Structure formats: C-alpha cells, structure tokens
Length: 235
Image (cartoon, rainbow, N blue to C red):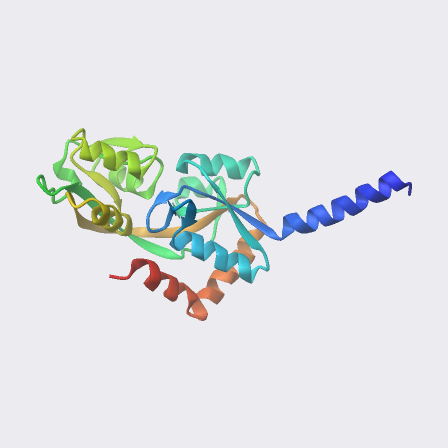
C-alpha cells in the first residue's frame, strides 16, 4: 500500500470511530419543558433523556434544532440518527419510520386567555396547534367539526392567541403549564390523556432501535427515567 493509501485508511478508521461515538438527534427546541433554549443552551426532559441514552450506548448526544416537520425528512436523508421531540408513533408514521418503546405518555390541554376561558376545543370554531403533532391528530379524530390552524411552532401559536387571532391553542399539558407560567394572562384546562406516548423516531430498519430500547429499559429499571420526570414535571 502506498503512503497516500495508508493515510486514507488511517483517516477513515479514526473518522469512522469518531462518528460512531456520536448519536445525532433531531429536535424542535420550542417545547418547554421537553426541549427549549435557555441562555443559548438547549435544555429539557427529552434532551436529558437523549444524553442518558447516548451514555449507556457509550456515545455522546449531539442535537440539531429544526422545525418539527423537518425531523422526518432529516431522518430519511440520513442527516441525523434519531429524532427526539415529543414524537408520537402513529400507524401512518410506522409505515415509513421505526420507533422506540414509548418513554412518556402525554396528557392534552387547551390554552386560552383567562378573560376568555374555554372548557373544550369542540366549543371553538377554530383552534391552533403545532403542525404534524399528536395534538393535530387528536383534533382531527375527536373534533372534526373544528377548523384546525396548524402552525410551525407552539411559540407561534401562543403569539397568535395573545394577539386575539385565535381563542385556543391545543398542546400537551407540561407545555401548557410552562407557557401559562411565563404568561400570566393565559390559562389552560386538561382535556384528555393520549392513547399513545412519546417515542424516539428512527429511520426504517435502523440498527439503533434494539439498543435504544434496551437503554430505555435500563433507565426505567435504575430509576433514572423517574428521576428525570420528577426533575422536569415537578409541581
């Protein structure tokens, strides 16, 4: 082997080893307390969980922040290894992607202005939610008479509510709690428990599925998963 070939082999060896030590996650960091930015740092329950999973797999978690709707194309394009961003497994999504075992069962809530409280989304002509989420799927199934206003982010939906352009925003309860805590003019009401939980999403046929599931089982068994839930969802 000539010098150039030897150098290329060594470069490939160390480059591949470095790449294998990184678990690259896609996320949409506008979902407090699951994933969000604070002082330039990405934080949240999903972020801590991703770090814990990566550690068990002897890897380091790396994150790419993007719109929720971009997570699935990024997986197909092999730009990331996995997606962790309050992703729900649905029959339609299972046709194209693999999912880990659920790690969190979400509850659904309606956010409104305290001056205009709403008991249920079915009482509205239209309601906002984030595009492509469980909340949109739930609304389509349970309130087909309501016009859904899908938006790129929950931040955008909340700003639309505060501006008076919509009377309700549908999201999961921990996010509703976080948004109303930071916006005293807002209130929320629990609506329902979801039938499906949040999972880590992977490319179809990904070899990571079994190892991630084993890591989640280990985190549940050793109490780390419960610890993270108490840390991020404490009263």
